[in-house]
Amino acid sequence: MWWAVTGLAARFRVLAVRLLGRLGFGEESFLVLLALLIGAVTAVAAVSFHELIDWVRRLLYMHLGGRVDLYGRGVAMLIALPAAGGLAVGLLSRHFFTAREGHGIVDVIESVIRSRGFIRPIAAIEKILTSAITIGSGGSAGAEGPIVQIGAAIASGVGQLFRVTRAHMPILIGCGSAAGISAIFNSPIGGVLFTLEVILRDFSIRAFAPVVIASVIANVATQALFRDVLGEPVRAIFQIPAWRLGQAQLTGWGGLGAFAILGLLSGLMGVAFTRLMHRGEDLFARMRLPRPLKPALGGTLLGLGGVFYVVVFGWLVLDQPKPFTFEDYAMPAFYGDGYGVVRELLAQGFYADTRAGQLLALLAFLCVAKILATCLTLASGGSGGIIAPCVFLGAATGGLLGMTLRTLPGLQGLQPHLLALVGMGAVLAAVVHAPLASILILLELTGDYGLVLPAMLASVIATGTARILFRDSIYTLSLRRRGLRIGTAADLLLLRRMTVEQVDLEPATVVRAGDSFQKVLDLVDSTGARDLVVFDDKDRYLGMLVAEDIQTALIQREAVPLLLAGELCRTGVPMVRNSDDLATVLDLFAAHNVDRLPVCVSDASAGVIGVISRGALMKRYQRELGD
Image (cartoon, rainbow, N blue to C red; front, side, top):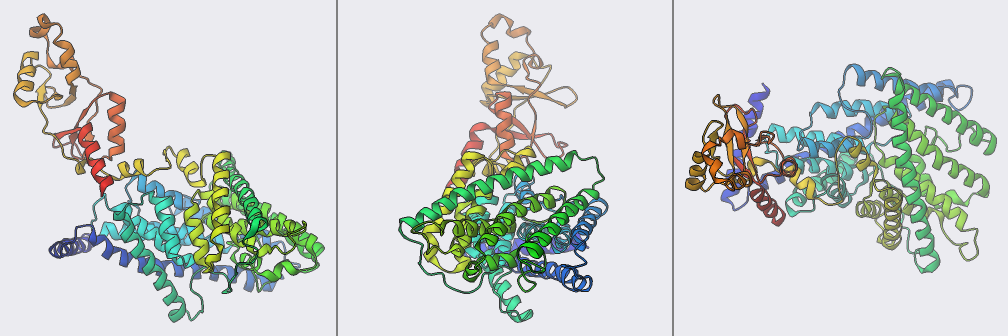
């Protein structure tokens, strides 16, 4: 059945490409049509995923929590709920699913690098279930990473359905990723830049157009779903209240100095978050516990922090059952994605409370608690993203700094909620090393471009500080620990996205191991070949006879009649497949100090189909850069 469907889809692709060709468009124009489909489907999946998380959260923390007096006599349930959620995710991951735990954007980047965009479509369902349980039960994580992974899985499934070439699959992955970010933050431009800056690391026009189309379609579809289907007056999964911030306190040396300090502090927070996350992963990896019990343990420790938070800051400090009311956020503040608390931190009235000392203590606690809670959740095996925790951490950091600075002479008029808003983008930039995307997401969230100067200043300083203190972002560190080298440029990813079959091959000149050296010289003279492929008498590949070795042998002319091709053959030179990426081939050129490698088809049953040269590889690479 599936083969019949893919066959029809492939025929449709061929016809569509042919029609587009007659209209003067290239084969890559077909990706734009697929981007329309990916954007719409990802929007539906993202909104459905958000509603599922919200349903689990309301079921556990409002309906069940209301029955057991969650912030009173039943406060122990704050331990039981995230622990049970962690156990459920652990059991699902151990016995039913094969997807990795943790924040899914790393898996998307890895799929682009290692498998050129191939992701099992079932991974979308796996991520929806495990992440909804993790976040809905109180695990400190966000929906963005899973939504990006869900969008990428949808895009990969669409590409596999229409049998898109491997060279084009990463672009479709970018379409799904951008659509996910656009749906979350009502940020189509930010979604595009996040994808190009973090996931694809490719700003070429070829990648830009389909990604933009998918992001725009996802944004429009998300708004339509909320407005027309769900009947909710919202524009995105996460949005801040619709009020304009104006230009107050954003200019002048005092205001810019405050945002510069915020950038430094955000950089420190970003590095602390990244380092602690991976220390936590190492700690849980060393634990000799069954896999399902690790996220359960993480949930239990998170719950103990939740009880401490309610008892100390709710009952003792603020003299109320819950520091943030149910109307703001049903969970403890640092549980879940925390977006309800973030909205409160962005409200100017929140900082007008006369209990300034208590608020300072609360914000300082939330900064520490959110980092630890997210590390416990994701490092132990929970499923979710790190963007929401970064946004929460940035808002708390900015609010804390704003309240502290406005006690100083000359800064009494400083508005902490403005620093909280800019801090969201600054901490995100420091953690993922993507200042452009962070700035644009922030500006699109607010719709107030009066924030351009402080957002740029804080985000750039935060990213620079983070890179000075620790070279890796949270994503590149994870990839490096998986054995993947990621640089700051797109060159390596571009080579990894291209395959041998995209390079013009030279015809292979074949000799047998038992052939005389004189016959080899005659072949070189008649064909002009510089490097020859050597087989034995049973048609088994032995290695390469390269020009350098031939020239060395000619120094001793008297030995020429006695030499055989097999004696001069470099037996350690491997054969490459036509499906291998060019980064792998380039590494083999360097490792074996040769200029040519023999090429076979994927199963090597058809023998050598040609020879790839270092020069042809670089020529193809230069042509790709020009496109």
